[in-house]
Amino acid sequence: MLELGIIASGSGSNAQAILDAVASGRLAARVRVVISNRPDAGVLERARKSKIPAVCLDHKDYSTRNIFDTALVATLKEHGVDTVALAGFMRMVTPVLLDAFPGRVLNIHPALLPAFPGTHGVADAHTYGVKLAGCTVHFVDAIMDHGPVIIQAAMPVLTDESVEALQARILETCEHRVYVQALQWLAENRLSTHHRTVHLAPADKPHLTVPNALFSPPLEI
Ligand code: GRF
Image (cartoon, rainbow, N blue to C red):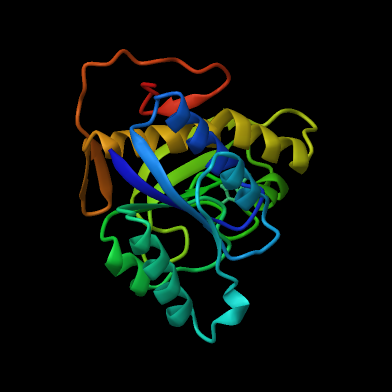
């Protein structure tokens, strides 16, 4: 069972997918707290609706990243968190956070890393003219969008698809599924990392197939 803290800056559709998966029993986790660095972030309202503690730590109130991350760690620890899911958190994290939760900070990025890291992953991939788009869930290290890859989901870009439509489809078709899957694998203690490669220990579960997406490894929930 994961004791999960979610940190997000935006609307929080990934956070919602995690909350829904916990509520329906697909993810063995308790969401202990949702933290945002933006007072007006939709994710805080989503947390309140689910009766989860919702905390705003406005980064503008902290003079350095280290001091901000110290406050993040204190809030996460106060709520009994052992695993941190960054879900659209638009700030670099520091070793202050990473060292407090070694090997237990995850992030989702809306592109097939190492292609198109950074804050405009979908737009950059769209402008580049890629034929496959998707997302990556990875362990977080001190470099942006860089840590070991847990799972990636890919799907074809449609002819004449706008960047907004592509972004929405990546969220719904890929992100909301694979983040829950990666967290469930962590909850089952099946992930191990050697150098940069994350291995998944087998389990006696049938693989589900997911329409319109190529998953590697296949989804199991
Ligand atoms: C997602 O595309 C995520 O991959 C990226 O930020 C976006 C957050 O979306 N890091 P949401 O707030 O979860 O809807």
